[in-house]
Image (cartoon, rainbow, N blue to C red; front, side):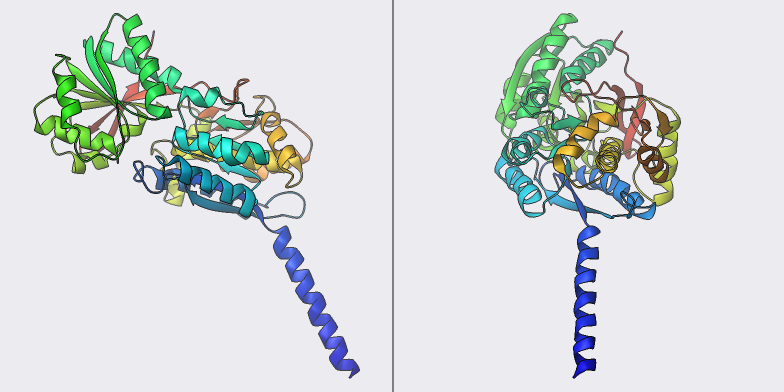
Length: 404
C-alpha cells in the first residue's frame, strides 16, 4: 500500500505544480479589432502587428524574473456595431481577465469598449487606429491612449492637401458615427479657414446597398470633388462605385479609413481618381529597425495602422514589465512611466534590451515604428501624414503632406 500512496502523492504534487506553472505563464492582453465589418481588409495586418510583439516577448525572456509568458487574446469588435464592441470588451475584461487592451480600431468601437468595460474594470487601452476627436474627450481616468493622431489634425491635413491641388469647392459625405462626424467637422472648419467652400456635408448610414440619392444631391451642388470619409470595405466603396457609374464625380478624396488596395477590385476605374491622407511615420532608426524586422518575419510592415499597432503592444509590454505584476492599476500607471521620452533608447524588436533596462530600474526611451512615443495629458500623440493614391495595382505613397 505504501508505494501506491507514495506514487499517488507524487502524482498529485506534480499536477498541482503543473497547474501553478500554467497559471504563472499566462498574462493575457487583448487585441480587439474590426475582424468583420467595414474594415475587414485592414484589420488582419493590424492585429498581426500587435500580436507579433508578444511573440517577441515570449522568445526573448518573457516578463519579469520568472519569464512569465504573454498570451494575446484576439476579439472581434466588428467596427460598426457598438453593442458587439461592448460585448468584446466585456469578454476581454471580465471573462478573459486581460491586463491591457490593444484596441479598439474603429473609434466608435473604442469608445464602447472603454465606457462599458475597460474604464469600469480599470484596464488600460491603447488604440492603434481610433482617430475621432471624441476619444480625446472621454472621461477615462487616464486609461485610454492611442498611437495614432486625432482627426482634429487629419482634418486639417486633408484640407491642405485638397487646396494644394487647386480644388476649392467640395462636397463631403461621411459615415454617421464618431469617426465620420469628428473627421468631417475638423475638415469643414480647416477647409473654410483655407478659403475653400464646402458645398454640402452630409452624413450617410453604414450598410446600405444604394447611395445614389445621396450622391445625386451632393453632385447637384456643383462641387468639383467628393470627399468620402468612410470605410473602404463598407459604405465608402459603394459610394465610390455608384458615383463613378452615374458620372456624378470623377475626382475623390478620402481619409485613412479608405486606404485599401481592395478598392481597385471593388471599384473598377478608381485608380488615378482618388487621393488619401494616410497616417505615416518619420524616418529614423526605429522605423528602419521595424521594417527590417517585419520583412524578415514575413509581415506587412506598411499596412495602414500596422506600425501603430506594433507600437501600442510594445508600450503595453513595457508597462507590464515595469509594473512587476499583472496588477491592472500598476500597469495602467506604468504606461506614462515608460513613455517619458527620456532614458536609454530601445528600438522595435529589442524586447530583451527593454526588459533589462526596466528591470535595472533605469528609464527607457522607446523609439518605435511610428517615432518617439510620448503622450499628452489626453493620451494623444502628434503625427504626420502621407499623400497616398491607388496606382500600379496597389496603394502608393507619394510623400509627406506639408501643412505650412
